[in-house]
Amino acid sequence: MFKQLKEDIQAVFARDPAARNTLEVLLTYPGIHALIIHRVAHQLWQKEFKGTARGISTFNRFLTGIEIHPGAKIGKRFFIDHGMGVVIGETAEIGDDVTLYHGVTLGGTTWNKGKRHPTLEDGVVVGAGAKILGPFIVGKNAKIGSNAVVTKAVPDNATAVGNPARYILKDYKEQPASLSLDDSRRMNYAKSLGFQPYAAVPNASDPVMDGFRILLDHMQKTDQRLQDICTSLSQVNPEFCMQRQKPLSKDDQAIIEEIKRECDLSTCSNERAFKK
Image (cartoon, rainbow, N blue to C red):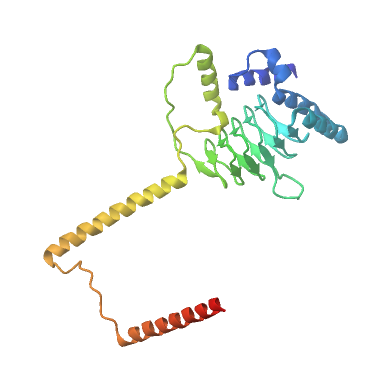
């Protein structure tokens, strides 16, 4: 129990640069309080003291603003930063080295019994306000962007953004920066976990916008090729690319005249109705 608590506190120092000392973390971090109380409630839940476990879970929500069902399974070095508004459902499963920010929901989409909440594998980071809904798996080291709504499985090492969530799998390069020894140590540890604060990936663009850019580039290239073809053919026949309008047939003219009469009648009717 104490060894697990020590690992949880070390995870706070590794992922939160605002943490200064162990006493401060133990006294002022609601994520640590919620995790300690949940581990007690979960033990009682497994031993069939379900009413007592739910009572402790309710007290946990009142004290920390974090609601964790006592049936939820949580791994090692779990970190909830800020924590207010976090909801974790009964059949949710959370692996090791997972990070959640405030306002995150691990919820379900059905009233049926059985598995109905998501499974977060090792190293997952979920940004503030994200909603992960349904009995699917979020792969290892995946990142869920702030306010994303995820309703289907997320591959390993992917970043999910938007509503509904879209996946970014493109690699990115971090910008080099001068760091202190403590910051460098924390960054190296975070990198080993696949951690990224608030699940915000640097230099990662929206895949939908990338698709539009590709389509626009392709359209421009196609237009240029057609123009080059017209230019080449016009050297052989100058009238090839000239726009020529065919004269209207009698039937076409009759249709146009009929449309004009209908428009005139409609305009007159509107004017009379307006005068009345």
